[in-house]
Structures are given as C-alpha cells and as structure tokens.
Image (cartoon, rainbow, N blue to C red; front, side, top):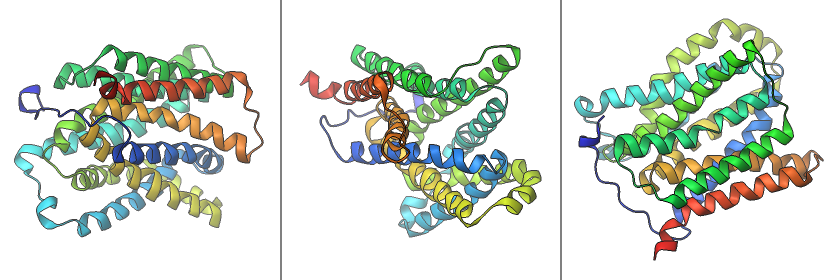
Length: 309
C-alpha cells in the first residue's frame, strides 16, 4: 500500500452521530473485557485463551460475512490480498505475540501505559503514509487523552524498572506500534473492501498461527476451566474480538484513523467505572482527573470539524 494508491479521505460530518455511537460501544466492550480477562488469565495461560477465543470470533464474523450481500463480499485479491494478509499479521498475530510475551517480562502498569501509545502511532502513520489531515487540535486531543489514560493506569498499578522489565517494555511497545499501524493502514483498504469482508479475512488469516501458538497450553487450560470460564471466553471472543474489530473498521472507514483511534482511550475509563460501580474500588481524585482528561481529549479530536464551522 502506498500513498499514491490511497483514495482521498473525506471529511466526517461534525457533531455526534452514528460513528461516534459505535466507537463508544467499542470502547465500552473493550473496557468491560479488561477485568474479565484479568479474571480468566489468573487460571488460564494467555496463549491458550487466545487460541480459544479467536476461532469463536472468526465463526461470528463468518456468519456476518455469509449474510452480507455477495457483491460486497467480493475482493480484488490481486490488489488487496497482500494488504489483508499484512493487516492480519500486524493487527492480530503481531499485536498478540508482542503483548503476551512482553506482559510476561514487565509489570501490568508498564504494559497498559505502553499499549496506550497506539493512537499516537496511528496518527503519525496516517499523516506520514497516507496524508491524513492533522490539525493542532487533533494533536492536543490525543496528548490530553493519553495523559488521562496514563494517570488512570498510574493510579491503578505500579511501574517497574530493570533490564528484564526493559525487554518486556520494548515488546509491549511493539504491540502498540502494531495496533497503531493496523488502524492507520486499514483506512485505504477499507475504501475498497467492505468492512465485514476486511474484518473476516484478517481474522481468518490470524486464526491458524494463534491457535498453533496456544496449542501447547490448551490441555492445561481446558483441565482447569469451569462453565464461567467458558462463558468469559465466548464473550471475549464474540464481543471483544469479533464485534468490536468489525465496528472499529466501520469507524476507520467513516471518520478516519486518527478520530477512530482516540476512542480506544475510553477503555480504561470504562474499566475504572466498572471497578467503582461494582467492585467497590475507590475513585480518588487522581483517577477521576484521568477519566476527565480522557473525555476532554476525545472531545477535542472528534469535534474539530464542528469548531471550524
């Protein structure tokens, strides 16, 4: 994919609309999935968890794909095949491999903060590779939202230093680069491939390597899993992977990579809200300020078009 083959990016409509709703829903699902994953991963190896939930996500997307009208399912493989495979390797296989192995070597606070850099990489790549317009207000909004996420994460988890932690930090940073690259590079592909088709094929290409990575850990995982564990895997696979990846690609096509990426910062706010509302976790001034900054940052990025009118 090169800038010369990228269709022009149309300006999204100002104000609150349907794309905002689906991206907010995506942030809510991802934020709800965080405490769910923490609970499951206390008993189940992360690679085994992925090996179970990715096939479920792919099955869900297969149903959507089959129900999509045939003309919209068609792909010009000579033009888009390599791009779909590349997006799959970057956004699914690469992201998961870097994050899982990095998390084993660093603290959860380090990992969460470094993954939160993904929208920043999205913006840089969207501008550099595809000429997506970037205003000062976009930059300010992304930085404010990142600062808010950092405050929330810093209040919830400590940070570690050291040689082993540094190796893990670099791996997790690689996962942030992968997700940022996926979000930026999916935009030109989404202009010529229907969002359901894009999501299904990228997920399908990733299933085999992710299942192979997790296969050695599956016997131990299945042995300890209860009915609640299986429900959590199903929910994480169908909703947090299948549904949200599809909605994310819809957002990328509709409002661009930068304005979609900033909604990823809603996930820690949702996780914080769940902890306060249902787990009796204290909110505190620091975490409350972080949540406020995230919301302000999202607003700055999304409503730039309205401000210019």
